Length: 76
Image (cartoon, rainbow, N blue to C red; front, side):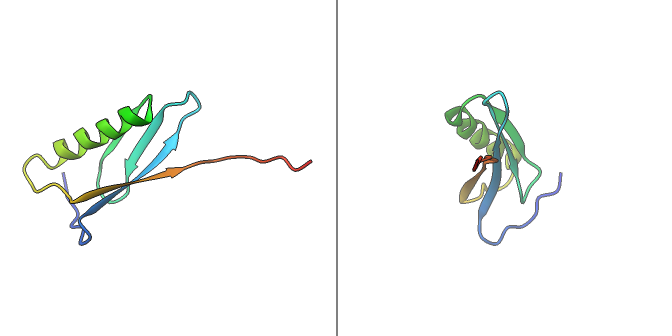
């Protein structure tokens, strides 16, 4: 498991909402991915996943969640 050095001390997760309403979060600067049925559960799962990933190293100072939405607007 390779940990990339992040000078900002921040992990960034790209979060997408699934068709069933659940969420998937993928870290852009480490190999961490998790999912959950609600936003609150996703936040808990991300915290747990990050703490598990860094079990033998200092945990980053911050985690940024970037929600990506795909929305179609009809103009006619």
